[in-house]
Image 1 (cartoon, rainbow, N blue to C red):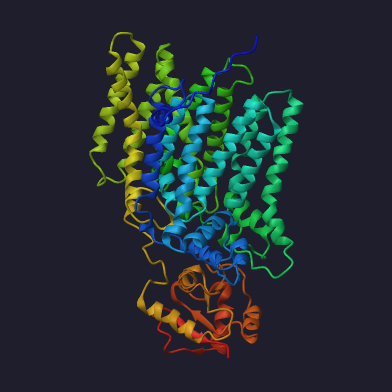
Image 2: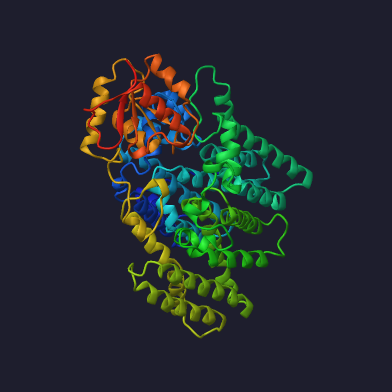
Length: 620
């Protein structure tokens, strides 16, 4: 007897739309609309009036402009199209901005769009990761938590590399979860490759997630211990290979290369181990590695709650830490390969390592660095809310955990809001009131019949609002104004500060006249002008698209060029003008010899049109 065959069922347009809106049949009906709402919220916070910040961080904007003009500058992450010196970071995020500028034309929008899209993608990928480990509800809550974390919104709206870093860290977690599920070396190697790309974005900061990935797979990966160790070794090789690809290419480049900004000797390896490595942790390297207290406050146990950092990421820290303890306790009896326990180890180790390093780092530490902590906090918070709400029904000990998380989180929110008393003062009253309702709901969860189903749901919503209203308000304020990418800070105080739409050298007519003068008199010289520090040169590069010698790199502290090298540029006809003083401060400190040489060998240009600094003609 032949088997009976049936034609495939074809869904109509209405059925397909209904399936898309409904999601998977096993999911609660609200999950698909919930994640859609979280992504829509993320898109609004990231994209609304995106160009309000202008070029935001003109240091990176100039490099993106250079990359849109020259493929060599694009590859090296050079500050100018002539590739005299690079920025002090690896170039992966600049590659995205440079390509965006080539496709869309260089503008504030094309510059900032890649970061906004990276952040939205990170929210979506965190949902997919947390959903696989825990539940769809936990995934939605984690995605929403990441979307409303103020520092997440801040990095999405500037041209710093942190938005791409966050996306790559979440991608490494997603592949690690897949590896725990499948036991495939390929998935673990891809996780390592994502960490390598994170290294290509912010060097050693990208490696800070490695302990979390390794711990999760070592504990929960299928197969015997020796096999897991071998697979982790393969993943480590993948991490090293991807991490080293660009530095090796720079080291082996057959032609001339730009000076590597931020290094002490022009070597990319020195940059990795010094300014972007141990210098960040231990404050080594003099002026290049110190200054942590300038931006992120005094290192120590409470740094994550201080005035500089607290408003960026601390809102949900109490919830995340209580969730981690509860999650590990609830999964203590699960099999070694249990995926839920692996999730708590993964995100818990991620959070704890970043908290430890950020809290005690002695070197340069900007508050926006904690954006790399935000996905772990969001994942722990989303998973913890679901796990503890269920646990509260089982025992009074189970009810104590969500009560502690709710009250501590609400307390931190009120304390953080007290630092900006003129911003939404009603929240300081509404949050405690909502927390009280939520706390009553937790108690009612333990006492059958005390509240009806709808009242219990309303109390749960009130509790969630008590914990999320503060960061959500700060995020809205962040999206409502311009941000200065040099030291971006989320919240109402920063919304009033901004990079401005121009971002040029002063943005004045006189400076535009200076650029016009230089362009008219450049002749056959390769470089339009030389000046100290990116504050002096970035605007000129953005406005003109011409090669510019940035003496000393970002802040004038790099030993490039030397006096002899500058003299050679002049003698070979590559440079005719040097700007002393102005926004960059002029050659000073280690560059005082350059200043003296320029003044001795140059002639002051009286009609250059600059209102800041003095322009010297040094070439024929």
